[in-house]
Length: 511
Image 1 (cartoon, rainbow, N blue to C red):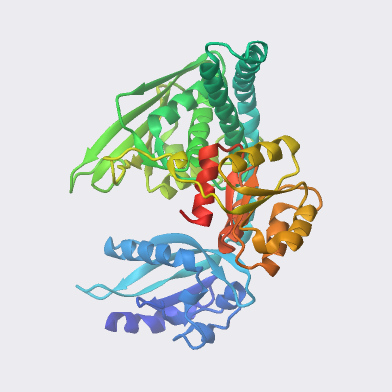
Image 2: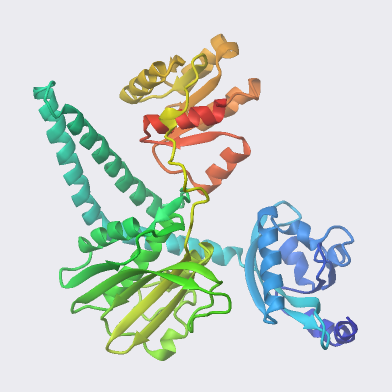
């Protein structure tokens, strides 16, 4: 501490004139500021004196609550390893505006002691993030166009199967294989909805679940898509020796990683070649490390994407994950693809490395922590095995006639009383008539005049405790999902199964 105090007079004057918000803070719970430069005012809206010694509030209070633990853990990790840190997070300014900031800092260490303080700089990166997000969206949409042909081929095959089997059953209602055909139709409908959902999720900033994902199945689907997407002179192969390959991952985000790397590999082989994707299991003992990437001890799944292209020069390889760095000609690359890959893999608690030799090819290795379910003894219980409630009244608001009739039939069959509305406005009128007897609102998000979101908001003005489930044909935007969570509103994505509907009803109304 003495050394830190001795250094402060020599550091403060020049630091105060640097761009951004230069700071020195203690390593306490509140990140108490000992010095803050004039840049504080532009970034936070507060005067430096407001933050120094927590006179008005602590800097920690400015950090978004969901980001605070992440910021603290990253700084503590860097101090333990005696290295500088770089981190991006959100703050709330004096006027309530959300800003993204980038912080870089170093610990101030007394001889033979732990860090006494941290010094660094905080910069407003909100405008740059907006530009980056826009370019990422453009890249995603460009990739969607490349993927569309392969998906259309799959979709047409699926619809052919459904049309043929349904036509057969119309002609022969008592066909001896009736149940088998109905099962096939159901399976193909699920595959069709999954294809559309993948395309929509990939092209927009939507919220998707992060379940346990089987990488073996996932990679087979990716390879199937790539085989119909890349040029005929590029062969795509998959090799896997892992029987159980579960990870905790957002499948859409992981799909972005694979598509980015695969399209880069394709571009590196203009005259054709081989794109190899492999999956392997890696177990690291305590103290054991790989040469090219730092991983914690434990079980890791490694996905390698290798091409036989022209390779990457060493001077480019060292900068390959930098945002906006690209070697492609103008109009063909933004430099965000590989930075995005690294960002997504990091979000999944993984790591990525790259090896390349000129004239031989390039290999990207993605390491993800293997996931082991806590309970393997019992099988999964389907929602159909959960006893359905038999006395509640559900107000169903759905403008599509066929969907409304199908959901009504299912709810009635499960024992619920159903009040049906064709529009949001009609639903409000029915609530005025039957509000006291209605136990749940089940509404489509997109309806004429009054949509599902406005409907539940107006219903809750008079019945604040009314349970609500919204149905959506599209994945929700992240901001929309956040608002629904804050209002304790559940949502279910179309098309959904009877089991999924029952599970949602039981979750909202109670077992």
